[in-house]
Length: 332
Image 1 (cartoon, rainbow, N blue to C red):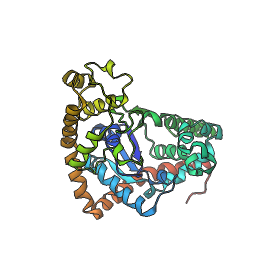
Image 2 (cartoon, rainbow, N blue to C red):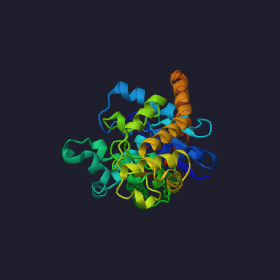
Image 3 (cartoon, helix red, strand yellow):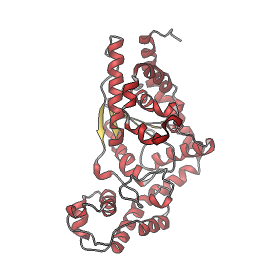
Image 4 (spheres, one colour):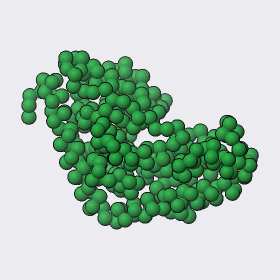
């Protein structure tokens, strides 16, 4: 089986966007891939995090992943900082990657903004750590969104340069598994921006911890336009909020936007939002309930993560130790 690795930051409560855009797609991979999934707390601290909040959010994210269907017995689920091979290999990759490569990374430019001189060096070399996350396990497939595809290309560049510099064929080429465009969920307040767990407005997103009342209220308040829903997808052009809500209903009901519009075309948003809220509540309420049960027993969640870290380390340590030997480090 191909080995898959992916991670998610504990920078806030996971949202509907995280679920439909990534987590839900990970669940079936457990059936036919050798899967490792990690909560990437090392990546999270590339921007300042309140320590107590980071601790809480890391456990919440792990609970959310399990509640959404990741089974710690069928995949390796762990916290990134618990497996030291990530940082060992990241330092080697810091020395392999070229500054010119990192200067081309658009995500750093987006996150650092105009005040890039005040950004952390960790944020700048973030892609090298991401490459280490992948190559520490000799993963060959990585589920990524379009915004991470450039980082995956860099991970392959780093692997190729390492192999070339040390005259080996050690790190394999990694193939992206691009998540579908239909699963891209946008803000409920601005259909041109991605739904984000770090958005200052809680009304911009559906959190996996939201109860039925909160979900219904947020959907009712979601921004729309004055026109009724079109009967065909082409009618959504130039209407980002309408496109977003139609896409959410299609994704949550496992249908296509075309099917949603065949059923609801011509209707106003009031009636459509009621249907959307009901569908979201029906789908997310069991996840919410499982997550509450898991967080009521934090020791059990922590124990599952420790077991996952032991399994992850058993895979990564021999690979990274071999990379260190290739570099010329004295064996431990």
